[in-house]
Image 1: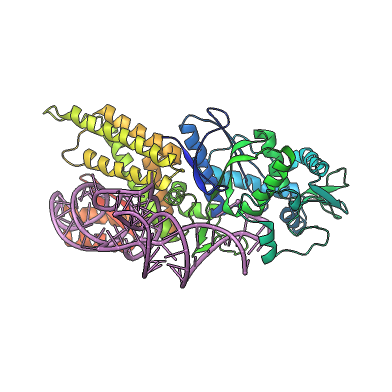
Image 2 (image 1 turned 30 degrees about the vertical axis):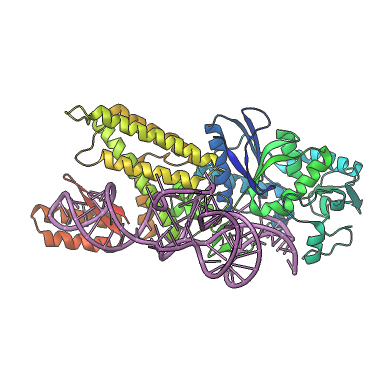
Length: 489
RNA sequence: GGCGGCAUAGCCAAGUGGCUAAGGCAGCGGUCUGCAAAACCGUUAUUCCCCGGUUCAAGUCCGGGUGCCGCCUCCA
């Protein structure tokens, strides 16, 4: 079986055939650096992080380019409001973006170019488009003439005539067609500018991606990605620019991730219903956020809520509990073998399950990166492991345990999950929950100590009352022969 | 107004025309436990929004309806 990818342009799953055997070039539209990133940005980042991780897992050499747009109306606006330079603004948000990505466990792309580093290339591209009759100038502004590009609309599946009929478009007398877009904009007083053949100006929004993708990946590359809101006009315009200039197709596969919603509405800046990545990561482990997103297919919308994150948190807890079980068995150094000599058979069964997991994982991910199905298989395996590794009949050799842990980490690494030490994960999770609920650790532990002595005196009623009162605050106790541990529900 | 997507259990969710409709969360019964927790076992959709059609066979394809959402303006 081979990898199949849903292509926005054809609206079909297509077999993935890279341009160059064994290599993949991906370009993903990154952020405009004018504000902190929210969970919607996190989803896009996680989706393409998993896609690149998976392609690498399958043996491809991946060049992953994700840009920063660091010159734009919103940045200029923010800079003038704060009386700062645009570089200071963009640098700040690029830095915060990078911190967020690191916290989310998103791998750094191969290249992260910035628009302002490629102004020369943009000027050259605009000049080419003018030469080819695809662009025209009016008062120092340069516009792209969409009617001159016959394929305009092919990505988003719309026709200019249809769009003009509906029309919620700004009135701009300078444009020949309302869907013509700005390639180069004459700078007003106080705005940043670069010298160009058309006077001092700055680039239009879509230009940087055409230039930087070409620069790092060539005229035609394998995968172009982004959020689904970029399909039109951003990616449509990129195609018009790049293909208009080169005469070659821009990308072979167009991949777009679905939105994060809040109460069934798109999470967005303008609606004001967004949660920043940093706010959420104060409340949940990054892998919880990743699991929440990956339990749905990347093209489906996901509805963001506290309930949904808590469900994902329970799921992560399940994964880490099993990892901890394996860890503990390994640390105990006990060869859990059966004197009857059946152990090797049990080991074989276990390794068979692991191989089965690996195969099913690949089958699911090959089908348009179906992480939801892949995670289902992971849970199947967890249930099998819990059944065979815990309880009185449990047995597994050290090497089988070793192999189990390795396989879980191998698959987890593709998804960006299971990367923490189980003890660390659990401790951090508990700390977060304690803060969230305003609980006092010392008080909880004092109650547990009281209960312990009550239990030693077999004062069951008192012990149970303490358990109940802690449970009411979400503190769940677990008795072991030597101690009582606790977690937060 | 134009174009497009989605509708599967209490909730989330996978499902590539054909064996018993994945998986997670929650619930219930059981095993274990002083009682619990975790884990395991069992259970929870005679049916996939509604109506028609194609087919030997449809959650899956086609047509119509209803509802929700997105893009057409900055947007991941």
